[in-house]
Image (cartoon, rainbow, N blue to C red; front, side, top):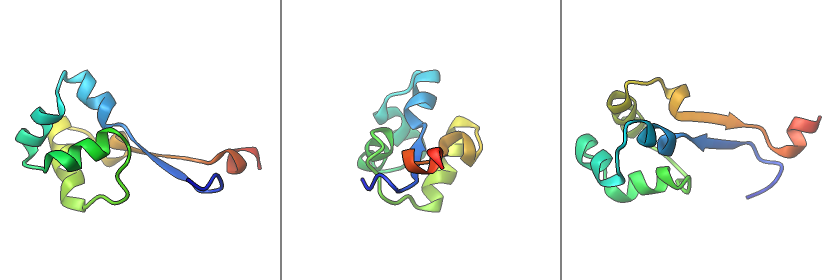
Length: 79
């Protein structure tokens, strides 16, 4: 990852831990592909479809900002 790039963090793992859910539970309850849930859980996803975000927000009864957070890069934070 380019160090000058802003990073978007996904808090899916935190929400799953809070509700004691496994990747398979989330995939089953949302109808999302297991690989999609895994990529978001591991923060390796490079793109996310809006219906996916909506499904996850509905499952965890949260807002988009609870699921994703913009984290400024080191260089942005220092300027």
